[in-house]
Image (cartoon, rainbow, N blue to C red; front, side, top):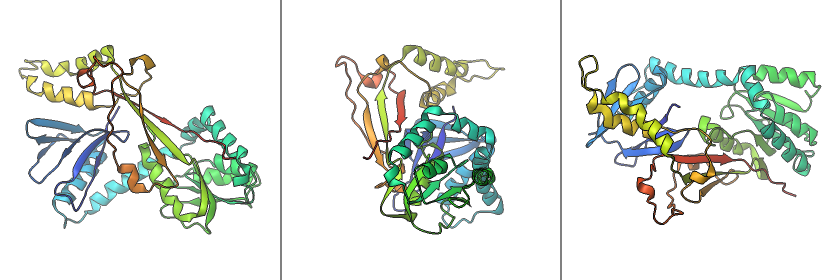
Length: 352
């Protein structure tokens, strides 16, 4: 699985921290200063050295590398202006993201997630008093399924916002279901469109992989500028659970991946000098899988995000936790602690 990177620029700080994220979960961090050595490796990799530690950042695409490298150059040279090429790169990344959700096959995958779709419908219909005769904003509506649920709950008017090309299909569904007087599709990003009026309810499906991937939550929180005082949001909050675990077989598999760099005569070249860096890189990468609960080494800690109270900056704040081992004779620090288990939980509770 690819590791997602974010360069967090803090103008008031002496050196902005660089974070490496697996679906927006921090797996390592260090301070990046003007003296930090770095160089480009190949078409889409960057080698960063700090003290005795070297980290090779390998990007999934050349465009992602260019976007990250541009941010780095802008920080080192505050007066630097983006070239036309740089603007094209940023625009291209945004276009790729929205094109992905513009495919009906992708929309079908999301709609066929029965547990999620049924949970949203149940939550909306069980809380019909929050929707009856109310104005609703559906952020990132996709094919508009949540908007249709809001109509079923008695909503007076729904503004469905969608930035991808699937918006044209949403309009077709609205017309086919004779709901043009109830649902109005607004094409564009929530940060850019203008909602005709303030709303009583905001609904969305912002829960992505590991909760924070795709930055949909940023848009969801941004949409609160259209929410009336004492308005409601569905969903209202979400929990992230974190717990350490140990898995000997997984450790062996990850260790074996780095054995390539132990070769001392690879076409006549000794690669062993990079083995340590390769080990660090492989063990920093997130592993998405299901695990038996018995491998947990401690009780999970929970981080709650209340969407009604949080702002966009809160999504980029990392909180430190102390986790105590269930076994006092076991040291978490040496028990393959680089592997972490995280899950996101969406719970919609009947407000009645």
